[in-house]
Image (cartoon, rainbow, N blue to C red; front, side, top):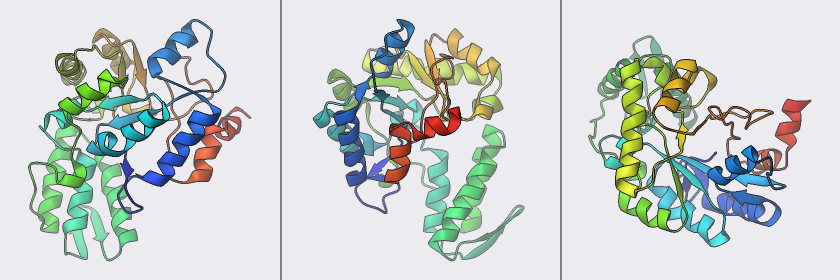
Length: 293
């Protein structure tokens, strides 16, 4: 499970050289597959040895600019879960808004609601981003959006309606071209909310509108849905039921498990890391052994 790839160590994603090294390992020692092919093999009881699926979430522009060319050159298939409102240009992702405000402010210390925030070092800025982001995961969607706007005001930063270059999304034209060369596209909702914080009508909108956008723009009906944030508290039986009712065949989470394919509405994934030993633990099965035993 990847999100972003960057050209250097300070780009906010896994550095390109580290990603290329990981792709080389996957190609050389494993059997890379699309998620669709893996699930079909699983249901037929015929998964090949050393099967690996590479997935990306969100749909940032660096997927098209950096990640996909590396994967295509290596012959490694990939499944991309896109936030369709982000791709449409209707919004930018809320964690990036928090990061942008923190990086742009000249204020070193500020009281924001119940938070006393120190922004006097890069380490503290990262801690503040985690603190505010974690809080946003615990509140309702509209409350979260309102809080982020107030956060910009508190930090004295102008709020851009459109995402700055470093936070831009992939385009539909890019997606259509990549789909023609083998990219598998799934839905990651319209606006990336925590679905358990929404009412039924709001959940249905996030599920059906994103599916219809992919079908209308790419011409392929997505089989897979990816839960935003994807932790165990971010979806429940109600959400899983609505995912199935919306016409999806499978759904993926963002945490690992001993039996990752047993529940087709909670397909579990290993998070990728720019730390190569951590990547090795996941890809060679040591993380699995740690859970199993």
